[in-house]
Length: 168
Image 1 (tube, rainbow, N blue to C red):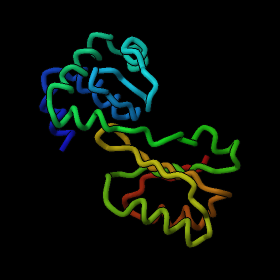
Image 2: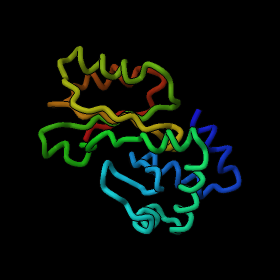
Image 3: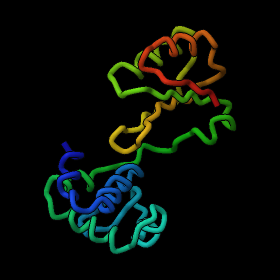
Image 4: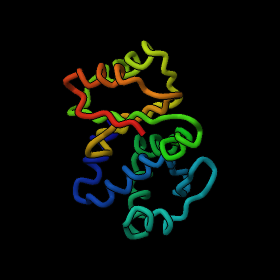
């Protein structure tokens, strides 16, 4: 698994592990020349380093290390961004955002929330589930058309895995 490989690779350097995780979290890739790319847009090391709060050399050294290993090189050369995340503009588009926080990551949460919404005719436009390997308190975000009925929220909250539901 990539997370175990990265944890082992950077066991003596938490900042470099952080850099690798941030490259992944932002959907960036690293080409064969060590350039950071957002699709085909080059992201300078200095800009990326400043954005994530590390030194430019830390970014450069992290990328060099990632390219040394065949598995991490293949992984980071093939990452693609998933597209625009609509949470901040959902209301402008006439949508709502359902934010679900869980006590622990378990299979079936997305299916259960989707089912509760589908039973009430709520269409899901976008789903984003934060990776528990990257985020301390991962959340599930669902951008939906129209309002979310209270009965759907009540059904979701009955699941013992669900910590909270927020609608924006």
